[in-house]
Length: 422
Ligand SMILES: [Zn+2]
Image (tube, rainbow, N blue to C red; front, side, top):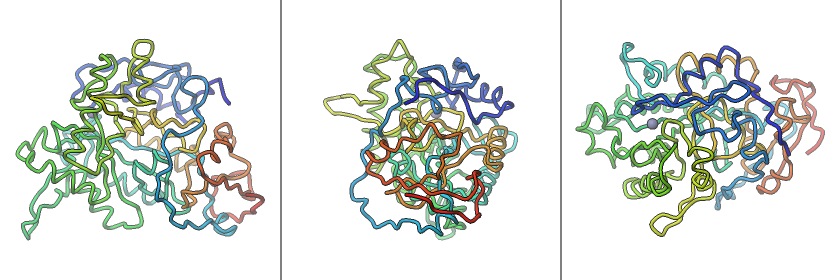
């Protein structure tokens, strides 16, 4: 059990100021930058996000870490997954207590003049995917992440891609030469689809936080509103996910309990009607704001425990912050799916984090390919040592597998290892 925040482990010095700027939440509808709460470690988080004043990923919500996922292991997942052999452990060097980046995109453009904090060039999105692919990342679904059912191949680092606001630049339909509706290649979906098709071993996916009033037609192509349902279905049919961004992009920092419930539940109800297969139980918090601590504590509890609306129980499986660091593993003692940090996809931010990943300054989650087991090197690397809780892992129904690489540096891959125990 840890009761004292230990401060930020990864955030590079130069990124602090930058994060301070970028973590001021601001999707397309932002009008006023939100106050940025600085903890003792000077890490910026959007107002209302921090319970403790320190980065959520590195401390506990209440001083007492949550010790279990609120999400039951999905039923029917009894497929036979093979355990890695000792030689495979040496080869792949899994570490499923490492960190997982959740990248956060908004609008996409092909016009360099329009590039901005929340507008990314399509060519840069392609470059991001290329970098991730070349550095052994594997795109996983949001559902597998929040439910701790990660099946990235052995040796791969999971990454989750998220897109907020359902703007037109994320997904337009155009007609191909046969007259068939296909994604515009310069929209986010077009870029993703082309890349995944060329790199089938990269995984595929993307979590789109939907605003019903936008539905990939606003602001520039309202004529495409007629394709709303068709686009949602297309996404789900092609391995993407559609989730919650509230009914009307409501800032949830300071609203009544009734409005808090309505904004979350009505988005879920809308998704159920327009996209029967959806992940409306995962919400990207507009502007990154959570109900204000000390003012709306009941709402903060509802985010964890669920609430009743119109006679029906609603329970979130996950909530996404705006900014500013990689997420802890769903098997970490610090994991709380209601407080998932993301990394904003802007050049200045991504270049720093990509550099950290490449240098091994962040201990990344490296998969063992088997969702039934949690494989962790022995000894646990110092930076994440406090996050291991064998009882928690066992209670989640998974088997803890330990192995001992030959050297202390577990981040170095491809060296011969020695399996000491399991
Ligand atoms: Zn937004």
